[in-house]
Length: 201
Image (tube, rainbow, N blue to C red; front, top):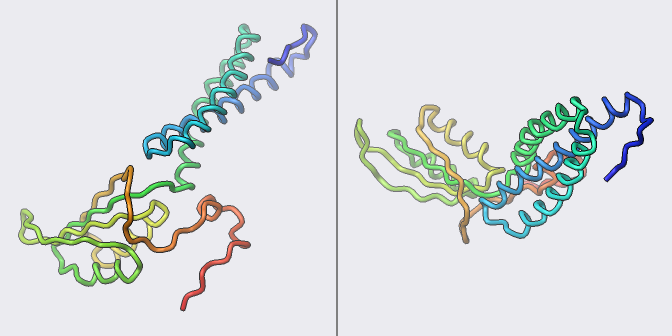
């Protein structure tokens, strides 16, 4: 795509081109990581849009590799960009906190206080009695948005630091009871000063 002249300086060939290839790989692999995550969550249109830009950027990067087949730093830039792209893509996905989780709590301690606390915080709760190895237990099920997961864990640990809980991704959920969620810019840590928080009554 970008023709390299024969008299191009060694700095451009050995430093600039590998850095450009690495940057392109970081972007396209980050898009690839996010695309896979959104596909697993059923977000088909968003995943398709990411796939379009991912493939376009990949073509730009691979064209530079083909034009510089004897440039070893270009190969290093390609590999480094791939590794960093996976890492950065997962960091972005964690900050976006897209989707829902199901939290299952199994506790031998009387759990009414925990159930009441979760309900008062705005979470939908389903609970049943069960039998564990050491005796009777309470099973609590709660579907939460991913950006609210840490708050739910805090509530569980305040109630019983030794409570056993498991967490799984939820691909699709309809209806349900959820407290207000932060916007995408707040989850990404952008413009925290300018976004007004709802006033507590």
